Length: 426
Image (cartoon, rainbow, N blue to C red):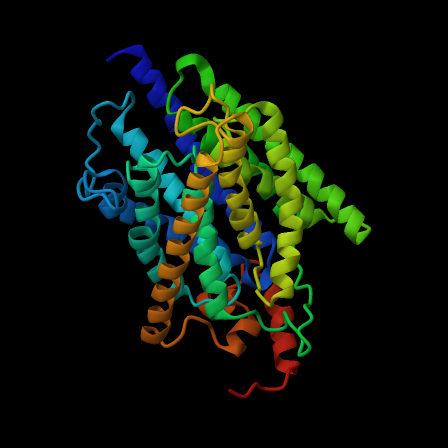
């Protein structure tokens, strides 16, 4: 076994571990961005659904993405046995784990649209359906040699495949589940249902930021030429520019440097650069990240004004920034770095690559939203609703779904508060 094979395998294994560690970042992000009465539920369901997606990816997802088939879907390699893949200069089982981690992240993003109001059963069923019906086709179209790959679609590490797909599924969920109790007043104005722990959310961003080096730089799947270092540098620059831009715009508009907005700016920069990190120069990475920090600020405010309750800003951070990041390669991809597709508009490539990128955004985003909306609508009918009762939502999903609080010291206080409230009528 040659040295380069072993080194590639080791590098991608490190990348897979970093991406799986991002699940922990999402636990802290979602928990810190919501109220403490749902903290244990959020942590537990995230681990459980990642376990479900892991098994489903082994049984079906990997084959649907990378199996031999047609431009729409793969049709082989189900129940993947870990054998090495011809033409792949690393261990097949390591590559499998790396791709499994991406599928798990996309599902975790999708569940942001369920936060604080969905039944545990809704998470379990949708984890299976998303992992078989929603994510694999899009991943096959772009990464598995499907029809968008044939058109030269550029998405190095998943601004479309992972982030936009998850965001559009989250969008479908928010529309079907409706806003949380108390989020909006009768006149349509929004209340701030603030997350209970900004330290959690800040730590989550740092964990995700570090994990993103596995996400993006690991997607080189090779140590040859140490190109992963350049990808990592672009990734870090975009994240830094995103947090700075979000701080500046929030200070200008709101009069304060809003902490949650700064954190979302960093994540938006990371999401946006994910598609283009291997295709653009460093100055473009900074610009892409900076623009994403501004976009996420206005996107969050837009969705809130439209009555769409998105507790962890999945639609803006992963959707809006994912769209911008995907389109950005059509503008900034250089002739030297565009190993897939064509150079961008600003490098003499004309509108061709930008058109391909837009086609990828529209087709992938529409597929993820429509299919998720249909699946969730069917689930709602079959499961007698996806949302917990009003009383259960007020109590909190920790107690109503699991019988215990993530913060046990809450029990006495919460029981006292409940006993003093008038009984609800349904």
